[in-house]
Image 1 (tube, helix red, strand yellow):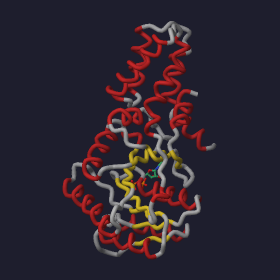
Image 2 (cartoon, rainbow, N blue to C red; image 1 turned 30 degrees about the vertical axis):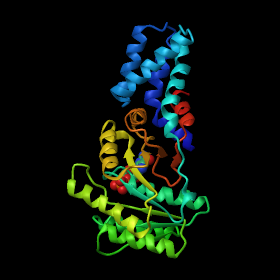
Image 3 (tube, protein in one colour; image 1 turned 45 degrees about the vertical axis):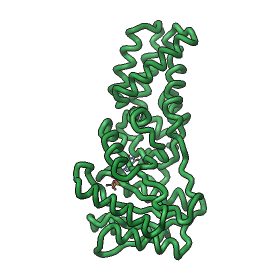
Image 4 (cartoon, rainbow, N blue to C red; image 1 turned 180 degrees about the horizontal axis):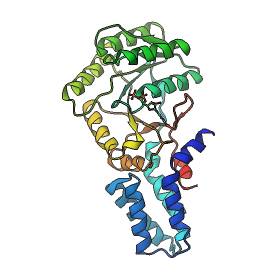
Length: 298
Ligand code: GDP
Protein backbone atom coordinates (compact mmCIF):
# COMPACT_ATOMS: atom_id res chain seq x y z
CA UNK A 1 0.00 0.00 0.00
CA UNK A 2 1.01 3.55 -0.56
CA UNK A 3 2.06 6.07 1.96
CA UNK A 4 -1.38 7.61 2.52
CA UNK A 5 -2.88 4.15 2.96
CA UNK A 6 -0.41 3.43 5.76
CA UNK A 7 -1.25 6.68 7.49
CA UNK A 8 -4.95 5.98 7.10
CA UNK A 9 -4.58 2.51 8.59
CA UNK A 10 -2.52 3.91 11.45
CA UNK A 11 -5.22 6.42 12.29
CA UNK A 12 -8.10 4.05 11.63
CA UNK A 13 -8.90 3.28 15.23
CA UNK A 14 -9.46 6.92 16.12
CA UNK A 15 -10.93 7.79 12.73
CA UNK A 16 -13.49 4.98 12.81
CA UNK A 17 -14.69 5.93 16.26
CA UNK A 18 -15.25 9.49 15.14
CA UNK A 19 -16.93 8.54 11.88
CA UNK A 20 -19.20 6.07 13.72
CA UNK A 21 -20.17 8.70 16.25
CA UNK A 22 -21.16 11.20 13.59
CA UNK A 23 -22.95 8.76 11.32
CA UNK A 24 -25.38 7.58 14.00
CA UNK A 25 -28.13 9.78 12.59
CA UNK A 26 -28.74 11.67 15.82
CA UNK A 27 -28.90 15.33 16.73
CA UNK A 28 -26.08 17.45 18.06
CA UNK A 29 -26.59 17.38 21.82
CA UNK A 30 -24.61 17.28 25.04
CA UNK A 31 -24.34 13.53 24.84
CA UNK A 32 -22.67 13.76 21.46
CA UNK A 33 -20.15 16.27 22.79
CA UNK A 34 -19.48 14.02 25.78
CA UNK A 35 -18.84 11.01 23.59
CA UNK A 36 -16.62 13.08 21.37
CA UNK A 37 -14.68 14.27 24.40
CA UNK A 38 -14.09 10.68 25.48
CA UNK A 39 -12.84 9.66 22.04
CA UNK A 40 -10.47 12.61 21.86
CA UNK A 41 -9.03 12.05 25.31
CA UNK A 42 -8.55 8.32 24.78
CA UNK A 43 -6.85 9.11 21.46
CA UNK A 44 -4.02 11.01 23.19
CA UNK A 45 -5.34 14.45 22.31
CA UNK A 46 -5.02 15.34 25.99
CA UNK A 47 -7.18 17.56 28.18
CA UNK A 48 -6.02 20.95 26.99
CA UNK A 49 -6.30 20.33 23.28
CA UNK A 50 -9.59 18.47 23.78
CA UNK A 51 -11.07 21.41 25.64
CA UNK A 52 -9.80 23.77 22.96
CA UNK A 53 -11.21 21.66 20.14
CA UNK A 54 -14.61 21.24 21.79
CA UNK A 55 -14.94 24.96 22.46
CA UNK A 56 -14.00 25.73 18.89
CA UNK A 57 -16.44 23.12 17.64
CA UNK A 58 -19.32 24.49 19.73
CA UNK A 59 -18.59 27.93 18.31
CA UNK A 60 -18.60 26.60 14.77
CA UNK A 61 -21.81 24.62 15.33
CA UNK A 62 -23.51 27.73 16.66
CA UNK A 63 -22.26 30.05 13.95
CA UNK A 64 -23.29 27.71 11.18
CA UNK A 65 -26.48 26.65 12.96
CA UNK A 66 -25.65 22.96 12.61
CA UNK A 67 -28.13 20.55 14.17
CA UNK A 68 -27.38 17.07 12.83
CA UNK A 69 -24.57 14.85 14.10
CA UNK A 70 -23.75 14.07 10.49
CA UNK A 71 -22.73 17.71 10.00
CA UNK A 72 -20.18 17.48 12.79
CA UNK A 73 -17.56 15.59 10.81
CA UNK A 74 -16.87 18.48 8.53
CA UNK A 75 -16.93 20.94 11.39
CA UNK A 76 -14.43 18.85 13.37
CA UNK A 77 -12.21 18.48 10.32
CA UNK A 78 -12.20 22.25 10.02
CA UNK A 79 -11.35 22.79 13.71
CA UNK A 80 -8.58 20.18 13.54
CA UNK A 81 -7.16 21.80 10.47
CA UNK A 82 -7.05 25.18 12.20
CA UNK A 83 -5.18 23.59 15.09
CA UNK A 84 -2.71 21.56 13.01
CA UNK A 85 -2.01 23.85 10.10
CA UNK A 86 0.48 26.03 11.97
CA UNK A 87 2.62 22.90 12.51
CA UNK A 88 2.95 22.25 8.79
CA UNK A 89 6.08 24.19 7.93
CA UNK A 90 8.31 22.20 5.61
CA UNK A 91 12.02 22.22 6.38
CA UNK A 92 13.96 24.40 3.96
CA UNK A 93 17.60 23.33 3.84
CA UNK A 94 18.44 25.79 1.09
CA UNK A 95 19.22 28.62 3.51
CA UNK A 96 22.72 27.43 4.45
CA UNK A 97 25.45 25.24 3.03
CA UNK A 98 26.08 22.97 4.71
CA UNK A 99 22.70 22.93 6.41
CA UNK A 100 23.34 21.19 9.71
CA UNK A 101 20.57 19.15 11.30
CA UNK A 102 21.10 17.83 14.80
CA UNK A 103 18.84 14.96 15.82
CA UNK A 104 17.84 14.08 19.34
CA UNK A 105 15.37 11.85 21.11
CA UNK A 106 14.93 9.03 23.57
CA UNK A 107 16.04 5.48 22.74
CA UNK A 108 13.68 3.62 20.47
CA UNK A 109 11.88 6.69 19.16
CA UNK A 110 13.08 5.89 15.66
CA UNK A 111 16.03 8.25 15.39
CA UNK A 112 18.42 5.98 13.52
CA UNK A 113 15.72 4.80 11.15
CA UNK A 114 14.64 8.38 10.52
CA UNK A 115 18.20 9.45 9.72
CA UNK A 116 18.32 6.88 6.93
CA UNK A 117 14.97 8.02 5.62
CA UNK A 118 16.00 11.68 5.80
CA UNK A 119 19.26 11.00 3.96
CA UNK A 120 17.27 9.35 1.20
CA UNK A 121 14.76 12.21 1.18
CA UNK A 122 17.45 14.85 0.69
CA UNK A 123 19.37 12.75 -1.84
CA UNK A 124 16.22 12.40 -3.89
CA UNK A 125 16.12 16.21 -4.03
CA UNK A 126 19.60 16.11 -5.56
CA UNK A 127 21.37 17.16 -2.38
CA UNK A 128 24.59 15.71 -1.04
CA UNK A 129 24.33 14.32 2.47
CA UNK A 130 26.86 13.55 5.18
CA UNK A 131 26.09 11.64 8.35
CA UNK A 132 27.81 12.23 11.66
CA UNK A 133 27.75 9.14 13.87
CA UNK A 134 27.34 11.02 17.10
CA UNK A 135 25.77 8.14 18.98
CA UNK A 136 29.03 7.19 20.64
CA UNK A 137 27.38 5.27 23.46
CA UNK A 138 26.36 2.32 21.35
CA UNK A 139 29.03 0.80 19.10
CA UNK A 140 26.21 -0.94 17.27
CA UNK A 141 24.64 2.39 16.35
CA UNK A 142 27.88 3.53 14.72
CA UNK A 143 28.25 0.25 12.83
CA UNK A 144 24.61 0.43 11.74
CA UNK A 145 25.07 3.94 10.37
CA UNK A 146 28.34 3.07 8.59
CA UNK A 147 26.90 -0.01 6.92
CA UNK A 148 23.88 1.97 5.92
CA UNK A 149 26.05 4.77 4.51
CA UNK A 150 28.14 2.37 2.43
CA UNK A 151 25.09 0.77 0.96
CA UNK A 152 23.52 4.10 0.09
CA UNK A 153 26.54 6.08 -1.01
CA UNK A 154 26.44 8.46 1.90
CA UNK A 155 29.63 9.50 3.68
CA UNK A 156 29.58 8.70 7.38
CA UNK A 157 31.99 10.38 9.75
CA UNK A 158 32.63 8.17 12.75
CA UNK A 159 35.34 7.53 15.32
CA UNK A 160 36.24 4.39 17.17
CA UNK A 161 36.33 6.28 20.41
CA UNK A 162 35.91 9.86 21.37
CA UNK A 163 32.93 11.86 22.40
CA UNK A 164 29.92 12.85 20.38
CA UNK A 165 30.90 16.51 20.23
CA UNK A 166 34.29 15.68 18.68
CA UNK A 167 32.78 13.40 16.03
CA UNK A 168 30.18 15.95 15.04
CA UNK A 169 32.75 18.77 15.04
CA UNK A 170 34.86 16.77 12.57
CA UNK A 171 31.81 15.99 10.49
CA UNK A 172 30.76 19.63 10.18
CA UNK A 173 34.29 20.60 9.15
CA UNK A 174 34.44 17.78 6.61
CA UNK A 175 31.08 18.89 5.23
CA UNK A 176 32.37 22.43 4.76
CA UNK A 177 35.52 21.21 3.02
CA UNK A 178 33.55 18.91 0.72
CA UNK A 179 30.77 21.41 0.02
CA UNK A 180 28.10 19.04 1.31
CA UNK A 181 24.51 20.30 1.30
CA UNK A 182 23.03 18.61 4.36
CA UNK A 183 24.66 17.22 7.51
CA UNK A 184 22.63 14.84 9.65
CA UNK A 185 24.17 14.66 13.11
CA UNK A 186 23.04 11.69 15.17
CA UNK A 187 23.21 11.81 18.95
CA UNK A 188 22.77 9.05 21.49
CA UNK A 189 19.26 8.37 22.68
CA UNK A 190 18.79 9.64 26.19
CA UNK A 191 16.19 9.97 28.85
CA UNK A 192 15.27 13.50 29.70
CA UNK A 193 15.68 12.59 33.38
CA UNK A 194 19.40 11.87 32.91
CA UNK A 195 20.73 15.29 33.83
CA UNK A 196 24.35 14.58 32.84
CA UNK A 197 23.27 13.37 29.42
CA UNK A 198 21.11 16.43 28.90
CA UNK A 199 24.20 18.53 29.76
CA UNK A 200 26.23 16.49 27.30
CA UNK A 201 23.82 17.13 24.44
CA UNK A 202 23.85 20.87 25.18
CA UNK A 203 27.61 20.69 24.81
CA UNK A 204 27.23 18.93 21.45
CA UNK A 205 25.11 21.83 20.27
CA UNK A 206 27.63 24.42 21.46
CA UNK A 207 30.47 22.57 19.71
CA UNK A 208 28.52 22.49 16.43
CA UNK A 209 28.23 26.26 16.67
CA UNK A 210 32.00 26.44 17.16
CA UNK A 211 32.60 24.36 14.04
CA UNK A 212 30.20 26.49 12.02
CA UNK A 213 28.83 29.66 13.62
CA UNK A 214 25.03 29.70 13.50
CA UNK A 215 24.78 25.91 13.24
CA UNK A 216 22.94 23.69 13.92
CA UNK A 217 20.33 25.23 11.65
CA UNK A 218 17.74 22.73 12.78
CA UNK A 219 17.35 20.77 16.01
CA UNK A 220 15.06 17.88 15.19
CA UNK A 221 13.41 15.94 17.99
CA UNK A 222 12.28 12.46 17.03
CA UNK A 223 9.13 11.39 18.87
CA UNK A 224 7.33 8.05 18.88
CA UNK A 225 3.65 8.86 18.32
CA UNK A 226 2.72 5.83 20.42
CA UNK A 227 4.11 7.30 23.61
CA UNK A 228 1.08 9.53 24.06
CA UNK A 229 1.44 12.25 26.63
CA UNK A 230 5.08 11.26 27.25
CA UNK A 231 5.81 12.82 23.89
CA UNK A 232 4.78 16.15 25.43
CA UNK A 233 7.16 15.91 28.36
CA UNK A 234 9.96 14.85 26.03
CA UNK A 235 9.27 17.86 23.82
CA UNK A 236 9.39 20.20 26.78
CA UNK A 237 12.60 18.73 28.19
CA UNK A 238 14.52 18.71 24.89
CA UNK A 239 13.17 22.14 23.99
CA UNK A 240 14.28 23.58 27.33
CA UNK A 241 17.75 22.09 26.85
CA UNK A 242 18.34 22.73 23.15
CA UNK A 243 15.63 24.87 21.62
CA UNK A 244 13.92 22.31 19.38
CA UNK A 245 13.07 23.79 15.96
CA UNK A 246 11.32 20.81 14.41
CA UNK A 247 9.73 17.46 15.18
CA UNK A 248 9.71 14.08 13.48
CA UNK A 249 6.69 12.10 14.59
CA UNK A 250 7.30 8.39 13.95
CA UNK A 251 5.19 5.24 13.95
CA UNK A 252 1.92 6.84 12.95
CA UNK A 253 1.27 3.60 11.06
CA UNK A 254 1.30 1.48 14.19
CA UNK A 255 -1.10 1.38 17.06
CA UNK A 256 -0.81 5.16 17.28
CA UNK A 257 -4.00 6.91 18.15
CA UNK A 258 -2.66 9.94 16.38
CA UNK A 259 -4.09 12.47 18.79
CA UNK A 260 -0.72 13.38 20.24
CA UNK A 261 -0.15 15.70 17.31
CA UNK A 262 -3.11 17.83 18.46
CA UNK A 263 -1.74 17.83 22.01
CA UNK A 264 1.60 19.05 20.69
CA UNK A 265 -0.08 21.73 18.61
CA UNK A 266 -1.73 23.09 21.74
CA UNK A 267 1.11 22.75 24.24
CA UNK A 268 4.29 23.17 22.14
CA UNK A 269 3.49 24.38 18.63
CA UNK A 270 6.85 23.37 17.18
CA UNK A 271 6.72 22.59 13.43
CA UNK A 272 6.23 18.90 12.65
CA UNK A 273 8.69 18.62 9.78
CA UNK A 274 8.17 14.95 8.98
CA UNK A 275 5.96 12.05 9.92
CA UNK A 276 6.95 8.37 9.77
CA UNK A 277 4.48 5.71 8.72
CA UNK A 278 6.65 2.59 8.51
CA UNK A 279 10.10 1.03 8.66
CA UNK A 280 10.92 1.41 4.97
CA UNK A 281 13.12 4.15 3.55
CA UNK A 282 10.17 5.77 1.79
CA UNK A 283 7.98 5.79 4.87
CA UNK A 284 8.82 9.33 5.89
CA UNK A 285 7.09 12.37 4.44
CA UNK A 286 6.75 16.05 5.18
CA UNK A 287 3.75 16.72 7.40
CA UNK A 288 0.77 18.13 5.52
CA UNK A 289 -2.14 19.07 7.79
CA UNK A 290 -4.82 18.54 5.12
CA UNK A 291 -3.52 15.05 4.39
CA UNK A 292 -3.46 14.15 8.03
CA UNK A 293 -7.01 15.32 8.68
CA UNK A 294 -8.36 13.63 5.58
CA UNK A 295 -6.54 10.38 6.49
CA UNK A 296 -8.18 10.60 9.90
CA UNK A 297 -11.73 11.53 8.95
CA UNK A 298 -11.88 10.35 5.33
P1 GDP B 1 16.38 4.84 17.90
O1 GDP B 1 16.73 4.09 19.14
O2 GDP B 1 15.65 6.11 18.23
O3 GDP B 1 17.52 5.07 16.98
O4 GDP B 1 15.29 3.94 17.14
P2 GDP B 1 15.41 3.06 15.84
O5 GDP B 1 15.60 3.91 14.64
O6 GDP B 1 16.40 1.97 16.06
O7 GDP B 1 13.91 2.48 15.77
C1 GDP B 1 13.36 1.66 16.76
C2 GDP B 1 12.35 0.73 16.10
O8 GDP B 1 11.25 1.48 15.58
C3 GDP B 1 12.93 -0.03 14.92
O9 GDP B 1 12.43 -1.35 14.96
C4 GDP B 1 12.38 0.71 13.71
O10 GDP B 1 12.25 -0.08 12.58
C5 GDP B 1 11.04 1.16 14.23
N1 GDP B 1 10.51 2.36 13.53
C6 GDP B 1 11.12 3.55 13.35
N2 GDP B 1 10.30 4.41 12.71
C7 GDP B 1 9.14 3.74 12.45
C8 GDP B 1 7.88 4.08 11.82
O11 GDP B 1 7.62 5.20 11.36
N3 GDP B 1 6.94 3.09 11.79
C9 GDP B 1 7.16 1.85 12.31
N4 GDP B 1 6.18 0.95 12.23
N5 GDP B 1 8.32 1.52 12.91
C10 GDP B 1 9.29 2.43 12.97
